Image (tube, rainbow, N blue to C red; front, top):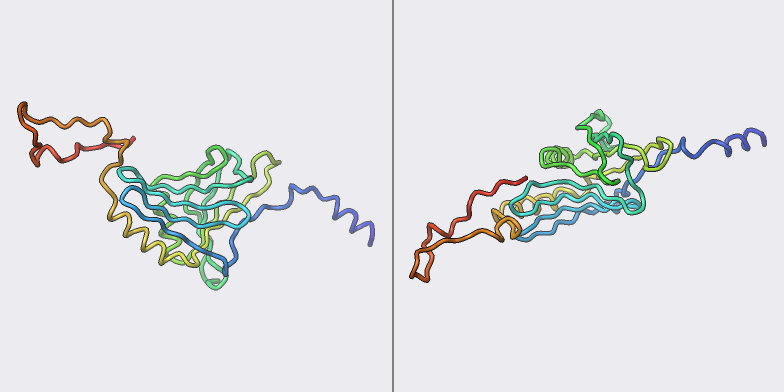
Length: 196
């Protein structure tokens, strides 16, 4: 018996997975609104946060940001995972992506897919490998508990965003006729702005 216990203790730590998720009773989504930026954030216990951010005039994006833990630069699978109280549903792949400097950052299309899964009551799992480890599994969860009200506020904020941000228009010239001090209404419209 003692020998078996000793052998179990000698198992390498790399066989253990790192799993970060907020308990149901602690799951909180916060929405922050202004005409310049809309934010929807979920704190992830022990890890960091998931942040949906839409800046005026730019595409929305999602950032999974760790504080002390980071994803390896290898593939990260993004999965829709049914919560325990919906056992009839199956886990499924939403998309694959890669981590950038330890964080997962996804574009507007993929961000909207994650939002749709959360709005449908699924939790979303980011499954990759822990940075600087021997392929140690690494799981970060976004919970759908408490999501809907904050999401509704986030959508209302997006409807009110300005068409451009200061960085996009700071060097825009407004021309008007020589000898006048007023600008006509036709000259007040912003030029078409293309995001990069």
